Amino acid sequence: MKLDRELERLQRIVVRCRKCPRLVAYLQEVSQHKPRRYRDWDYWSKPLPSFGDPDARLLIIGLAPAAQGGNRTGRMFTGDRSGEWLFNALYKFGFANQPNSLRRDDGFKLNDCYITATIRCAPPKNKPLPEEIENCRPYFLEELDLLKKVEVIVPLGQIAFAQTLRSLRLKGAEIPSLSFGHGKVYEVSTGQALRTPNSRLRTFTLVVTYHPSQQNTQTGKLTKPMFHKIFKMVRKNLEVES
Ligand code: SF4
Image 1 (cartoon, protein in one colour):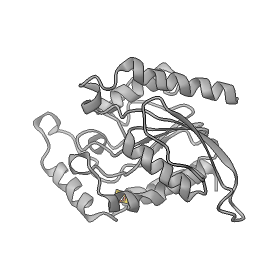
Image 2 (tube, protein in one colour; image 1 turned 60 degrees about the horizontal axis):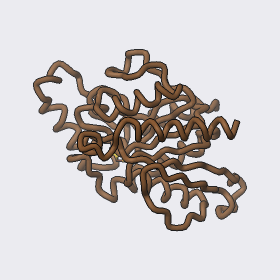
Image 3 (tube, protein in one colour; image 1 turned 90 degrees about the vertical axis):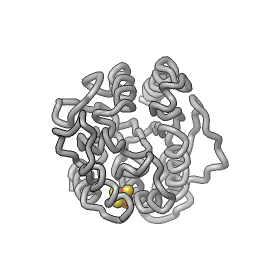
Image 4 (spheres, protein in one colour; image 1 turned 90 degrees about the horizontal axis):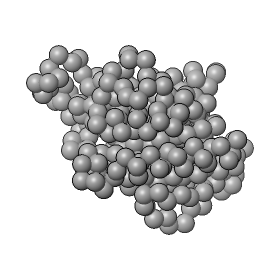
């Protein structure tokens, strides 16, 4: 099966997933209690599929969909404040065709970039439980196998960073304890320790950033120049590799 079809098949499975009862119930509740400004929206309120370019060299890992953002529009980061920052940075550095996306049918496209998340259902207060992260991890592990050209991974925030390391360790990477910090860069290789016929050595560059959440952007912990610097580093890294 072709790679893009494999990714589509996986995303169809994701959208039907009901492994986390707390989140399934929460998504129903969100769609039944819409804020006034979104009352005309038909909320997606299901697990969100990942999206992007199947040949991407850049993989971005978010935390979780926002209840009134991606969970409303049906696409990760689409229509929320974090998405405004992320899409603007991706556009500026040539990874997207538009500087923002408010609806999933507005023609926004990623180029050489794929966006996924630690969990795919919006959690109450943006706080997933450890078992919900565990439940969702197999989807990410399968995406990592299918996205064969990924060279650079950008986990957004500390939880996505920790979960990326955990997933890469499960893929055979022998990673020492690495500290989280905005702008830190790490090289990680997988494949050797698995010793299975399908295991192969892959090397990823991890570029670490604070999450562009309102909590970070409104307090000045993350500024636009700081965030753009991350994607400048990514672009430079990909140019060196190609
Ligand atoms: S968070 Fe992930 S594992 Fe849990 S229900 Fe949603 S898609 Fe399924």
